[in-house]
Image 1 (spheres, rainbow, N blue to C red):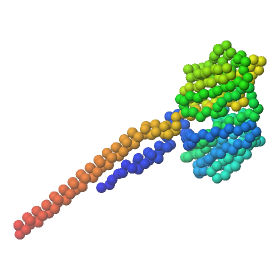
Image 2 (cartoon, one colour):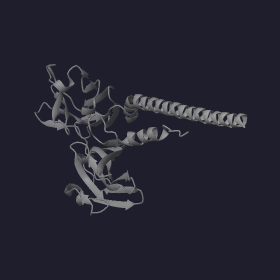
Image 3 (cartoon, helix red, strand yellow):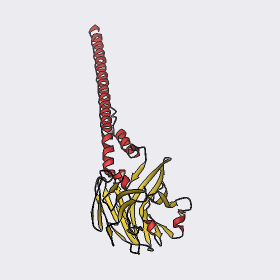
Length: 321
């Protein structure tokens, strides 16, 4: 009897699962949800390291900033590396082993951003983009300003809250204080006038609270979303009509749901398919088994009848003789 095993079919399903596209059609993969935070002074030197895939399918490694999306350096496995002109005169790289290390000299305040390592590969003529570790870079100015702001960076999950504090070093009570977001979206998040008149951006409607006590303004952002990721800066219009901006700002990085949760959710969709496939395979095997058994039994019956007829024939012949 020939037995048809369902295991190859199920094994094929498991091989194909990693290549199913997400609900949005993208073929992106996030391999590392951890984030490093680097805080340096203007003029310092920093090293950013991207761990490469090191597989035969890899075609390149990229370091880019998140907001606005800008390619800083792209190291190809076939072509000469590309370096953004704004970084070309102060950037060097070392491609050694499984790491690509980028060194940036004389960092500026404008370099404060979220830096992402991205790996590109091609499998069966299909292109895949794989995100690695993110690095939050906060560059502090050496000159002291009129406004102090804290914290330098915030690392939060979607739905959480965070506080941003603005402190005026000298205050006469007539200043107009505001919180701005600068990179992904130029926006006036909060504007507090001296007459206690407040304007809140529609983006943060029902999600922003603040408290003001003399020189100190504490702003609370609730129910953070991924789109809230940005650099937020305290600013003030002073009594002498001069405009002053915080030297540091606050880098806010908001992460969505973890990839593991997405994977579990996706797997939950395919589990019923796998179970049905197993049941169908088992049913087919059971039917084949029954058919083979019937054929075997019928064959034995035919053989038995043949033997009886032969014996009867021989007996009749003996009687005649």
